[in-house]
Image (cartoon, rainbow, N blue to C red; front, side, top):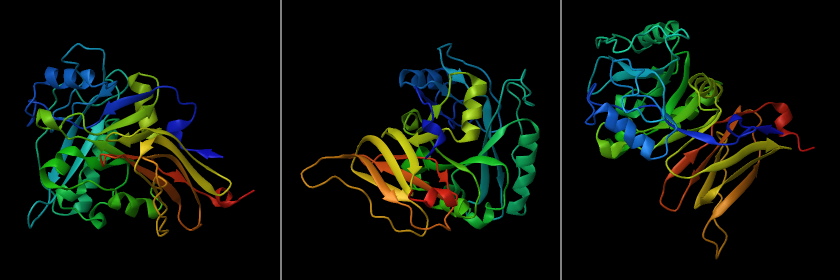
Length: 314
């Protein structure tokens, strides 16, 4: 049996926000109000990722773990919107973070998309982990970021982009990287600027509630992402993938180039809470699952990376 890391010895899964903005950059909400809103909505941790403005502080004084971070960006030649945005998160200063509280950085431009690796390398050298943000909104096809190395995750849901622009609501770009063999996780975020955009997309992390433990779990992919549904387990055993979840209208398995039919409630039933499929394509290096509830809200597992033993039925 191979179980996805979010569900190995899982007890309480922490609820966290990895991308939001305040009046420290272009957000509408005061930092204390944004933090308090997340705390009141059951969040255990969050990062204030204002543009080019690093933060460690808990401005609200409520018992929520603040993950240090910011959002960096670089413009690219047009036409239209064309840019790379990167969220970075890291440990405390005492544990080796290279940035200071309120340290600000200028915006800038690159001539070629591959130059973004320079920014990633700089963030990693300062002991920060990186998330590739909203590729659709940024006008960047996968060929312009598939060469980038070192991102532990990419956004597969971005509430701000979805609400304002109808973009960044699916994971097609993610699959392009996964099928190449890249081990990159998917995160749901809000990228909230107005107060109404917060608390719509989050991660559920299998971790104790401490900064270093949360960062390690994120790096290891020990989490799933959601806009509402809950996922209780996801595993592969004897050539089949299995999932258990809260009541769902649809469950989809994604094993690229294999068109699995979605699991739906049987006639007369209102929902489905589990599903299983036979693994059918040994050349595809992963399988993942998506749960959709009756309101259309989704939750996404991170992938289980497969090897030849996973296809054996005995």
